[in-house]
Image (cartoon, rainbow, N blue to C red; front, side):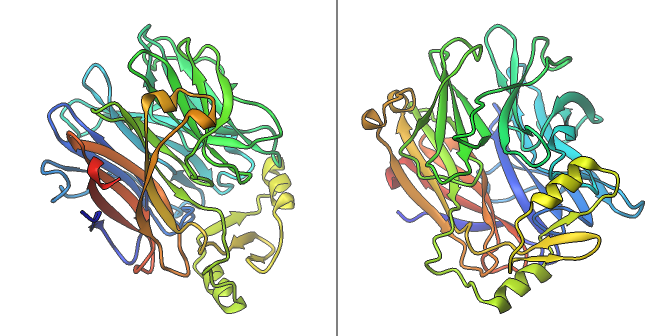
Length: 398
């Protein structure tokens, strides 16, 4: 049976992106995503929640949790939300936020993670609760049996150095947080955007984006996150994108992600198309006087035909490389194996972004009934700006 594709949300005046899903114990599917003017929110930004009680066939009206713009000159920019049901039954919505300008580049360590809680299955949410967790692109919280919470975020060693995966731990269910520490710290790999899976026997597997051309990486902990082994290569070809990993009811690990390495196979590299990409202003890096981290990062940006620079900003043309979105499934034994020769898995293509401005592949997924899955993805494709698209498939489709 082919993968079923359908539109969840499309507004041709809005860049809808970075969706995430959870399924509550009552069977409700809750979706969160961001609305903005581009891949990077530089003019306006909204954090949205919707829910479905029929496996994604219909959705509630938008609940706008945050609505920001630059009318005051500086905007609070909400970046990459996650949503989950905690073990105590509450719904947790979390998102990283930073001021724009300067934006996230070079100042990732100043970004703050904010929590909202819902006690009515996502119909309403509490006031925002600022945490001391720092960094961008958080994973959802991993709850450990001893009561600790682990929350991964991306941080940067210095203004122009590589990103690294930081872990921050709470011993009191998120009320207070310890200082972050690096999951892995070596110049031979650039690991970030982790997705942690808690295995049935308690082991933790952290799947990570790798920005230097390697396949999806993983690290393994057998002591509740106190120490980690790895990183190890996986059979999963995902790269340059955030993996979303979790356990299925039949004892597999499912990972949705994108293949984002430019292949130059079918990508339009003409000067005209690059100018059109720049004109969309998908990524705008402001130049902020007096902000040392921002100025160092601006100096580190590689100039080329895909960049337009003015006195006040750098505009980067994006699109054309983040084209493939897919699902990958493997047995638990494979997920726990450090030896690539002992791993095994199956890949299922979900979508191909055919736009010259292709930008897609940050996803969320749930198992809405045993062996049946719903994925939400952001994708340009036939829309002038990004839209939220859904997919349904089953284990038999791999």
